[in-house]
Image (cartoon, rainbow over all chains, first blue to last red; front, side, top):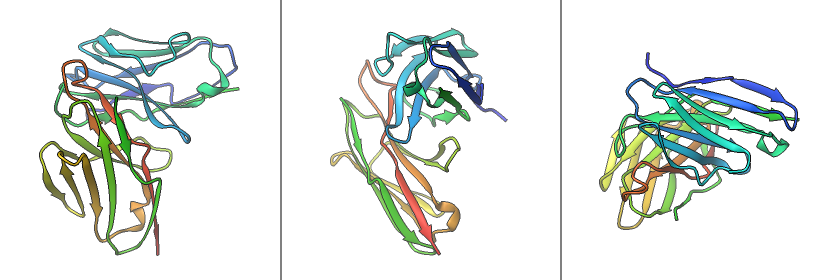
Length: 114
Length: 113
């Protein structure tokens, strides 16, 4: 049963701490997205990769957020230092092709920064 | 830039029909998605339209007009479990944004008995 896997599912941390979220896309999917969802903003696109190369990270606060794909089976989103306004659910999603196909979502990582 | 608009909230009655509209303005276009999201869960795929017209899938149908930048999701024979948020999303076009998929803010649908 192919699915996108995200860890951790829940994270509570204190302001100033580093947070790393991980995503394993579906095998064979070459495009990976990171979204952030809050009640106020809905689903915001933070960054996305095709064939492990970053295509667009304009939605990400550059000073504290970074996204990478060390290999085809792992995408990471790092926040350093974290702030209370970063509290949200972070979703990873993957799709097989560049122009076609359904976007599959992971279960999300719920982050709370105190 | 890209802009996607859909109503914030809608209410409908069990057994009835509801239509959720979505308008978009994007730099290029390579398809429009509808997703369903229950509270506390991840979005799940409902439909994908690339060409103009109506796509029917069981109780759900989705319509697209590319010239008008308009889509709707039609839900028939509403059930209580259809209470959820419905997200409209557009895949951009052009060389630099071929893969970019942007979501609207979602429409929260409440079904009353």
